[in-house]
Length: 456
Image 1: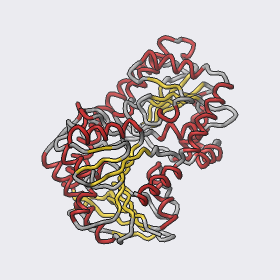
Image 2: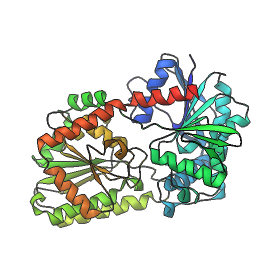
Image 3: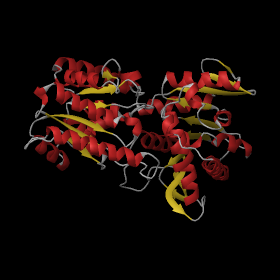
Image 4: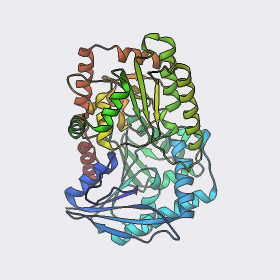
């Protein structure tokens, strides 16, 4: 059986007792444990030079190979082109695009370093599974080194429309490089149509529903919505329903109803918009004042990347203004926390809440929405209020309450509906969404992508 070589910017821990979190980490680890293979990526360390590898052996033929980046490569590859150009543009925030020639050169240089590390360890029948926007040109660099293995790319973030993608300097070079992959996986059909449209219009490629042919090279495209492990999440939330952190949370709530949101501190998540939506709820529906609390958990993310410090400051000011307006002696409307909680604790928080609020302005999938649904008690589930611009909305539209995050009054109306929803309707909506989560589980995502890569 062929090994799997996984490439991602960061890797999950193999050490005993360390828990892998997130869809990428869990899904990749499970795949590698089944067939054996290597997970390769940046170690998270800054060194004098990039690319001195360090191997770590796990059980069942699974190993990690990581290496540091120099400060210059980190600044140009990661902070620069990846997160100051690709991330904002792929999330339709061209106003935050910050391009420099040296960042683009650094992006290509780090991709060449990854390609050289791959060539050293790859065997002829290995399957190379590359993850996300950090490595769009990786397959092309590997081909230039003579590698003939099958290469698959899975894009965890959205693919933008034709006009938005073209705001990236060197967009055509990037797209041609991506065509060196044998299979490109996307989260939604909208992403697939946008990618196919770009190749047709601007590179003259011939396309079918799921294939792009450019300069005689065929690249297959497919929609693979990433999922979660619903049974595992249910167990986590149930087992930790009496955790110390949850007891503290409930003590502070004093039997008030709870709206909860959990996101990285990122401008794509619509955090300011959701604060304003909750404020509108309090402003226009007095019955909820003093009876509903909103908890926002937003761990810091990319604090050294252009634009993120301003976001944090704006959120703190917005939360402070809302709390200053409505706080009572025994009630604070918004609890805004810039800190992390472990996964079991978060799942127990989801289970204890009456509404899960996801207001992404643009998202590849948004696994928080799926985790919220999976964590709910079946006999008394909460309601998911979900942005129509999150990839998860394509799957959960029938069970969630969809919102436009730019419509503040509409968000307030939907929160009102969610808080007043009868038990029978909540159970029905939850059952519909759980059926989807079981069908499109994390295992199904992984198996479909790898089966298609083998057969491409």
